[in-house]
Amino acid sequence: IGDLFPNADRVKDFTCPVYVIHGTDDEIVPFYHGESLFNLLPDSSKTVPFWARGACHNNIEMEMPTAYIKRLQQFVRQCHRTHNPPPPLPISTGIAASMRMPTCSSMRRGPTTANEV
Image (cartoon, rainbow, N blue to C red; front, side, top):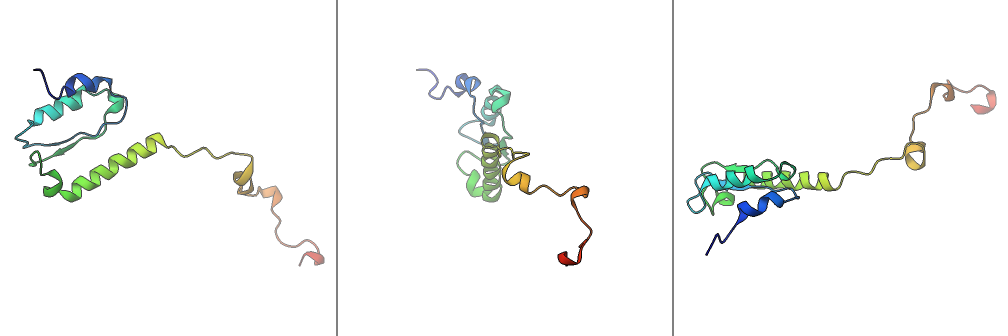
């Protein structure tokens, strides 16, 4: 029949960020499977995995909801920053130019004539 989930054969070709979540006490898919998948990922796809200490296969989000959501949000933010970097600001045109600080030579120290008061 073969492996119903041949993930180990597929992960080496991944090009996107991958977030591995695995319970250390998983009784359905042994923990070492999660570690193996993480280790087989290309370095460019690896993100910080969530090894849910003491969690099983189907209870991670129930046993540790705060950690689960926090780590998931971190992963999503990392993906967003990686794939949507802020555009560079132009140096000498548009808004950036109008926001430049005046130079010392262009600043005056108060009115120079009675008409400017």
